[in-house]
Length: 343
Ligand code: ADP
Ligand code: MG
Image (cartoon, rainbow, N blue to C red; front, side, top):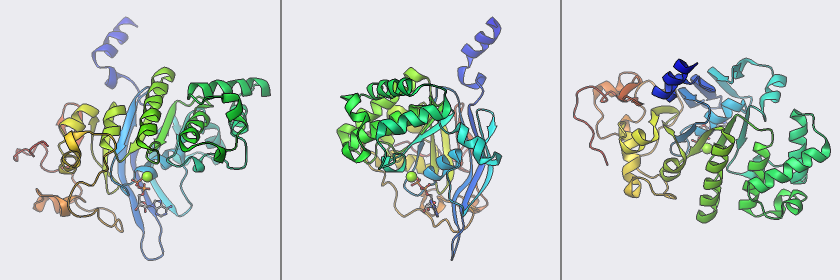
């Protein structure tokens, strides 16, 4: 026991079993003229109590990755790889058993509350139904839990707000209500898909601080998707950078955001004033992301990369150690070639 604790203290991250493991996940959408290879061989781990930010430009496959964990993808999606969540093999389990996990094991908040909140049902009722779907509690008890959740997400006049319909609340309050709904079954893993992007800057900061506080007090593990370097710096323990459906770099937030090794990450940081300013949009590097009409067969960033050379076109680069706590998919990393100058 003591020995185990000592070992855990020596290397807290490596000792803890992941709560979520995504292994070689690929998602392709069948299209009329061409398929879209939205996610290509993504592998990620999330440990209890950890916040992982997935950072990348629009269209890089962040949402599709998150939705795969909830198995909320349309029928024309072709999915391969493995998602193991709290010991459950998500991609192969029955829809009925999956429904039991959505809520108490994993739940999701979205950029648009409209994706989670039913517009024609009072918010309080949506929350009490969620609670009672997963736990045997009386209606009164569920209502009290809902009220406490509204207090927890700092919705003023919670009793009155519980009886409101979603469209009767402001954008910020709706976002808080959706967060309360997502927390109502006490998930171990919370998936947050750009939950602050649609809000005004000040409300955005309030919600971000709230989410961080909730994560700490409830001890949840969180995957936080964002295109905003400053938001990732604010909230994440670890960061994964996605480009064209691939994780090009991942590791501790400090390593990835301050000592990025992949030219895409470096470009991303350079484009953001002082490296991490909240609210800056990523618009970093000349050129545009590639069409995703075929599976990657080379470094997908090569056409935009100032350092590209022949080996970059010779298959998808393997992950290489960029430091003890961070890996990157770039042939230059650890090759002895001149280091890419940091921003
Ligand atoms: P991000 O969240 O990083 O902005 P997404 O994960 O939403 O990007 O999308 C990745 C790619 O998958 C995009 O090219 C997008 O157009 C495509 N895509 C997403 N959902 C669907 C869908 N339901 N049908 C077809 N293509 C989709
Ligand atoms: Mg998205």
